[in-house]
Length: 80
Image (cartoon, rainbow, N blue to C red; front, side, top):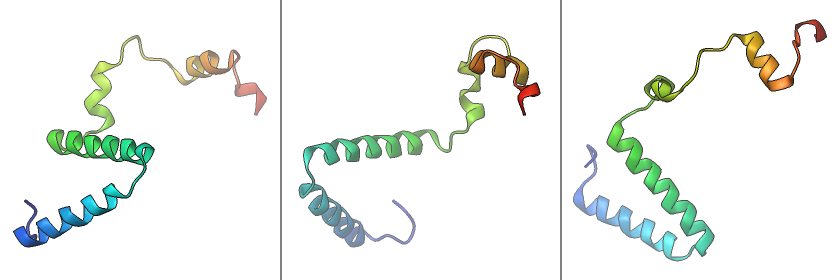
């Protein structure tokens, strides 16, 4: 529980959230579920950074020129 939040305050907050959710159409409920799942994932793992998932990338590192070539099919340095 967060510091400064009482049990009665937490209960009132949950009740307010449930009332809002009950009024939502199904597509919005799916978005709420996705967001709550994201919050639970983020809370379970703490703050994640790009570096935390960088090890999952595969392949050799690419130079900026190689990225330009892969994206645009040509060296764009001369086209500025």
